[in-house]
Amino acid sequence: MNSILISTVFFCLISVAGVAVYIVLYGSHRVFQERFSEMAMKLKLAEGDGLLVGDRESEGVARSLFQWALQRMPAPKASPSTEKISRLLVRAGFLRSATARTFQLIRLIAFIALGIIGLLVAVTLGFAMGRSILVVLGSLALGYFAPLYYLRRRAGKRQKEISRQLSDVL
Image (cartoon, rainbow, N blue to C red; front, side, top):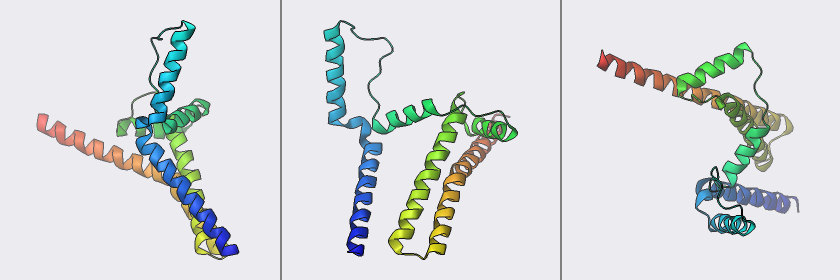
């Protein structure tokens, strides 16, 4: 019974992950979303509002959820580490003012997602308690530091590209 329960839970989690990947990849090309936006347009026209100037078509479920979470994310407090990350974001090519908040949200999502994945791997493979804790802590650390590693690599590549182009110009 225990192995059947674990298999069922694992299958459900894989199914949810598959649906999430589908929504992320093909979220803007979905039929339901187009139908809902068409119905919303008809409602606006029926109410006499017409088209608003700032209206945009819906962007997909994943992007909408990300924007919702980003609006509720507090602004980063001024500290030396926040200033370092802001400079690193500029060096990587992210110039908008809200990029620090976006980076914090991405880091938080990666931290939580990889922590959950580490827990699922530990439970699925049947590790002992000590090893399970190490797997979860390792995946949490990976989720916390991976976005920063990516940002540093991107900034380094961009700086090398700019220096190559600058040497050609000179």
